[in-house]
Amino acid sequence: MRCIHVGLLCGQDNPVDRPTILDALSMMYSEGNQLPTPKPPAYYFSRNRDEPEIVECELQIFSPNNLSITEMEAR
Image (tube, rainbow, N blue to C red):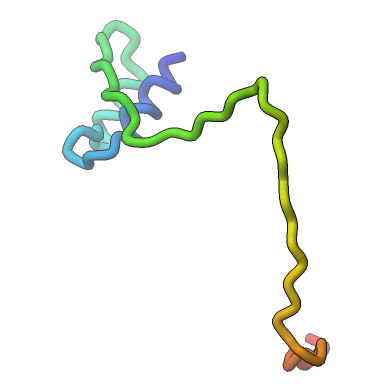
């Protein structure tokens, strides 16, 4: 759990709020110290699990004659 807490601190949106590498290592290996509370994330992805996931795929052909300019050659 300590590792996740330190990871959240290292991923803060504002670089000033992030610990230095030395501080992060110190936090990981010192059991007695109380860790600062991470600030809420700047952004996150949320999905309602009750709604079915709908994925729409559309095939797009970017070459009108289906030709490629890639030339195959052995290494």
